[in-house]
Length: 109
Image (cartoon, rainbow, N blue to C red; front, side):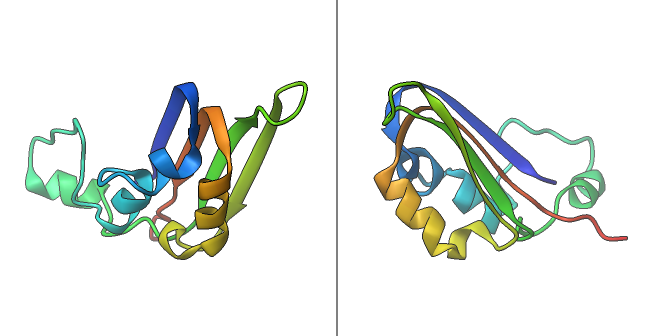
């Protein structure tokens, strides 16, 4: 199961929502037991639907407010989100009022 998050509000550092909170998308990628708001009729269905980790890549999109006109920006990788130092550096340095992010879990053939 891939995971998505979206934020629209006052400009915040990407790390404030992507990496620092206990329930951030990066922490969820390492702990697939976290299923906010998901209820399954059986444990078997939940196990089939969810994988242990989301380690098959991630992406982040945001609108930059550092330029005269808002500019859309994207950063993506096929590496696990929690080990990507570029994501950590971007998160500390970029503020945006609009952020979309996802972590990917590839399905088995």
